[in-house]
Image (cartoon, rainbow, N blue to C red; front, side, top):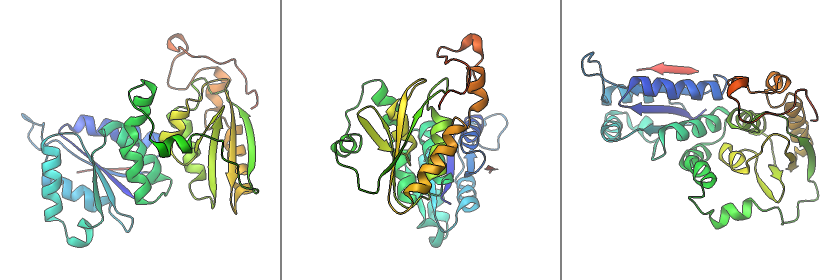
Length: 277
């Protein structure tokens, strides 16, 4: 599994990011933090030795992705690379991604067992979900092609339709559950809403699809394990992507009814390791 290291000036910030990533992946992410310095009166800062230790802690054959907040976090990480044994240093990739969104996207991909290149790309594209929602970015030609289902599906394509009842749609946690369930399937897997189709192996892509409560979606699978992929998705959907209790209550588990702004009717319908350095 690709390891994740979070480097921050603030231990509290890094611990919060790690907590989010751990919850998102149900504790499956191999993650360590290197944050703050050992000075009670001036705890804000970064330590190259701590960064080196964090990288060594989570590094295996798959390598390590490092996300940093700002300024000396990058400098400390570069110094740590110089101190590392070459066999480890060659497996480390530094990513200029927003530390919260990037860590979430990278952690989901890593916990799902996806390769280093995919983990890095998910981290780099993490901010694009928010940008697209706010109309601040234009999709690349490749993204536009991937999101358009006009191309004919392969003859072996299998599909499954579902009416989403999750009170807040397919937000981060349900999307992470989908990625995790389908990561090792041999074949292509897609999620479609209306005239858009996106990869079901990408947290960012599912988020961009903007699936809300009461939306209809179609899962599409092709390849040698298409039937298996459909069955996995069907079983996950029947648990409302891990939010069956929230659907029964009509509100997500971490939002109280009086503060919820998006509600669905009650009923089912159709439907860490954190190493501190």
